[in-house]
Amino acid sequence: MAAAFEIMSEVNFRGLRADALADRAGVPKSTIYRRWPSLAELAVDAIDTRLGPRALQPTDDPLADITTLICTTHALLLGPGLARTLVQLAMELVEHPEASGSYRARVIAPLREGAIEAVQRAIDAGLWRGPDATTSVDLMVGAMLYRVAWFDHVPSLDECFTLAEAVAREPLPR
Image (cartoon, rainbow, N blue to C red; front, side, top):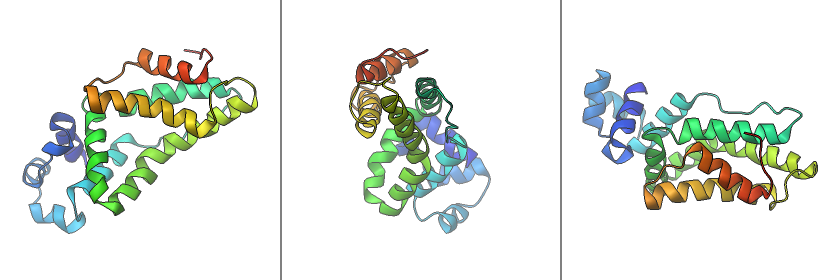
């Protein structure tokens, strides 16, 4: 898993090759294909393993939780090499439905569900004037991924906060 993640960080998902992975991991190529039916599924496992636990433990302050989620998401998903890899992998997963479902459940859902829940608590407390929680989270994440996918620009943490505040129509604690 570590070797796959290292390769993807260096050359993105499209540069991941079974022979190079086998060499780096010190295993026969057959070991890779015996365990994973596709490089996409291997990539999902490698990313999920590398990212580790991502579930948010809610506090009494939904805006502080949103700030934590923005910082966590930026650090985990928009780090060097990973943002482009995630976009490439997401596009590749269109042709791999099983891996796609696993990617959504294991990589995306923990942060997305925590963010939706935190935004909903902020709405309930009158601290969020933006759209409903699901739409708000999708707008924030979508804007960040759009910049990565189409402009090859990984947003800074400041840019992530600017996007979130535009959606919330409220300042967020930083």
